[in-house]
Image (cartoon, rainbow, N blue to C red; front, side, top):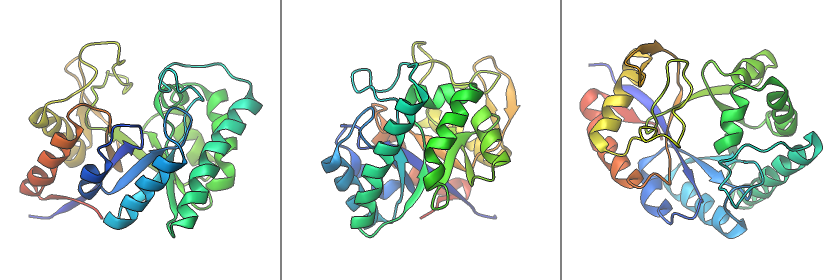
Length: 247
């Protein structure tokens, strides 16, 4: 049976304290860099652990909104948002350099991530903000999103991202966290959700439809209550399906 390698990513440095247990089980991480969570100490700790376990490091910038964990949309002047995004990335980038690592990718967080899916003006602002870093890193964004299409048109290295612990609607948007069925927390349920994504490039939506899509990397949220249990289960279960986590 032919083996398939996959990239499993996780949002870390968000105050959960589970990084040392999670990092051996994944292949890339998205580090909170001060917008919604994190500070220089937490960034350095995660970068050092990522180096130890051979995990690719990414920046996870957000709307500057620690009060709401970056999960509420904000209307900010372009200059203010650009400055915040660059300050977040620059802070992490300095630490990454000091630790002898490189910045592999950039992945927006929370409400910013979701807003970039459908808002072309905001997407261009974000792409302009990260332009100084796209020669050394790629962008994680969802398949079919406005930001993904614009990034490709502008020659930016792009990796499509899918969520193993979130439910999808038929238009490939995520079920909002305000709804009870938004998050998948049971290990077998996550595996059943993930396998068709990897093997068939399709996802079953909450309406029961099966929708084709593409993904290069699959996310488990670090603040999902059962994140560690899910990742431990996947690390032992995926090889039974001839799938291994890339390192």
